[in-house]
Image (cartoon, rainbow, N blue to C red; front, side, top):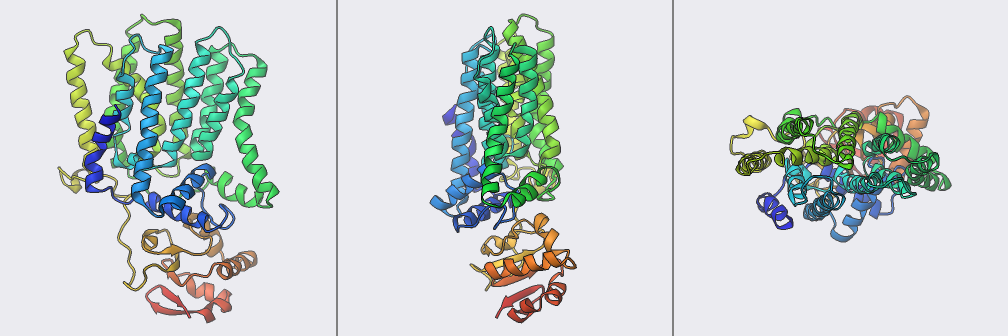
Amino acid sequence: MLVLLVLVRLPVYVTGLPLLVPELQWMLLGEQLNKGFMLYVDVWDSTAPLAALVYAGLDAVFGRSQAAYEVAALLCSAIQVVYFNEIMHRRGVFPERNFIPGLLYLVVLSGSVDCFTLSPALLASLFLLLALGTLLKQLNRAGATDEVFEIGFYISTAGLFYPPAGLFIIWAVVSLVLYSGASFRQHFLNLFGFLFPFLLTALFYYLDGNYEAFSRIFLASVFQIRQYNLNDFQSLLLAVVLPLTVAVLGFFRILNYGRYTNFQTRAQQIMVFWAVTSVLSVALMPFLAPMQFIVFAPCVTFFCVHFFTSFRRQWVPELIFLFFFGGVLLICYQTVYPIFGNTVTGQLAALRLQPPNLPPDIRGKRIIVLGDALSEYRDNFPATPYLNWKLARYDLEHLDNYDNVINILRNFEQDPPEYIIDRQALVPKLFQRIPALQRRYRKVGEGIYRRV
């Protein structure tokens, strides 16, 4: 399976993955954190804290390297493939014990090339699988144990990588209430395990005197802020249509096949709850793209396994699997090998980073971009905390507020940019409100101001 995982991704690695907008943002965030800036205080970005730490670690070792993200994603995917197959095999979730669960998990993770980079959703899925493994262990016993604390802890950790994953505490609570026979104390342990990492993170910012920034940028952004307008529905539908179709067919196969043990039936029901929770998490996703739907992978794979193992004639599932696997790879490779032309699928068109519209001499400079664009940072470095425009606009677009003006001046003085790239025509009003900035910058092009 691991060799196959590498072989599936090798054609994409050889051609080179397109640099994606969120991928560049994660790299920029890692750079800023390694310079000693503090997340949510000195860098305004709503990326979850544990994901930000991972990106800072990658930057510390490899710098701004897309290959590092791809290799790390490959390792994370490999661990998930092996672990998912192991828990399905060890717990006896399916009537037959084989490598089909891991194989199909591998196929589901190959639906789109944006799943080949180290997204917060991919990182969170690893901890959601750990929660699934612990929950299945509880369901296979006569009564629950204090290990239910681990379930909540894993889900909370996943939420600190990718906030929508935190909703899976609902899945855990419902599953334990209905199927585990857990006591009130054990349900409390599960909830405490979920709250504990969040409380530690909040306490860290509170003791540092920056809880307000943590609450305003991270906690509030989960429900209010959307980072990008990257709703490429066509790419999303193409990536999920085949796995989702097979999963739905597998679900109906389960209904027509009644020879399951009590534990296997309970496992099927909690995976239905997983699917419902995954659908609920869509409302909290910062943007819609195939990489965000990796949290669906365990339940989709689970029902796909039931579909392929429900046939009596062996050659039938083999033939269907070849078409299924080939179709998934064809859609995936369309991004880098446009077999049918770019106009047919438009794969990941909204996610791709566009070429920067800057003069050739603006390279390797510290800049700030006033507007919802990151391409200008591709060959430059961010200055000031205003990395995420959706957050920065609350200061920069409300210049009649005295506190905002003071904050802007302070941020420009602490980390002054060499160039201001104005995509929203905000600089004239900004200079009017802050004459000190007007004396420091001169216009050198359309919407471009250089520090003198």
